[in-house]
Image 1 (tube, helix red, strand yellow):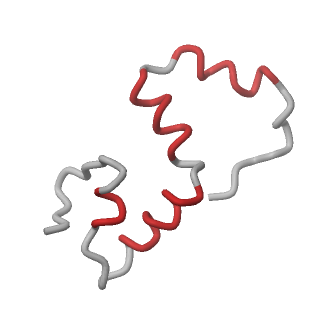
Image 2 (cartoon, one colour):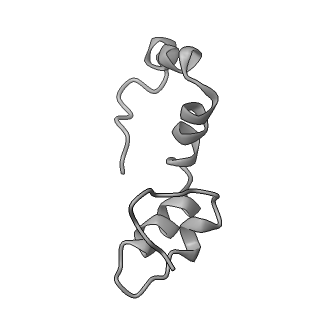
Length: 66
């Protein structure tokens, strides 16, 4: 999940954030969080029960973490 850092100082690169609904804006920041990235990767393993991602308040329709 490495973002393209070539234009990180460019305000134009972030103009799209002005028009995002609250849920999409929250996702833009959450997906960059290293703790979330770690928990997400853990849920991809077959041994994980999904508690790591569940603590972030996320739901994935069609996927059971029970």
